[in-house]
Length: 277
Image 1: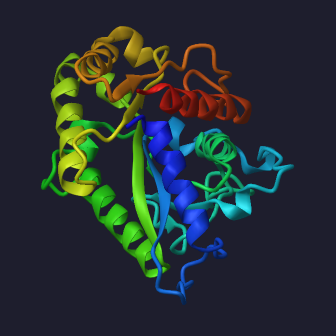
Image 2: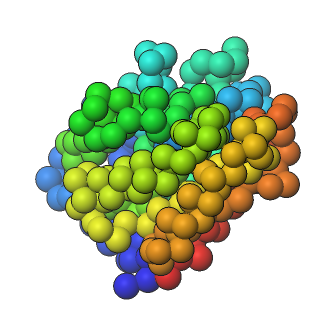
């Protein structure tokens, strides 16, 4: 079934079962009826985190979508996280008004298209590479923590009477693995391993759509473009994997996107998901 069609059907079923509950850590569905909700998993390094996404420039929400969108976020190693599921908005840290990444425009875009909220799980930390930080499954790196947090988040959704229906993994990362030729050469195998493990062992869906991206103009990536080739090669072998580009997005420095750039990036990522078969 077409990914977008499946997502729209699940959303419609959820709306027919019962009205949406306010989002918070302690909400429980008194009816006991499980409501399906589309869930998007966003992960990566600084441009997924929103390193230059100053919350003071948080985009206006004239349609009032944010309070309806369930949001669970974690900044690993920084001891910063949402208190369970909350509503879409800036995350604490980095700036006095907090920060945000591409998840804001991404979630709003897909919520508008569906006519009902989607849920977003975000786990991102700047300056992190697969070899040094995320590591392989079972090696105690960020990937293992990511999976633990994902399990906790989906468990909390179920406690609230929501049945998570994973729609896609959105992975924006790779610049740190371009730091040296040796790291860049390992990137494809390491990324493929994490995709395979997440599909098989976390969502039990071998065809979960995956959206890939990284900053092609980062100085390390320009020097060691094997990481770009790795994402291209992975996408070429799987119709449910798509690589996106960050070329042309507005930057605050050599690599980090401005608030406007983050907004456009989120729209690109959402459009990429919608384009999958």
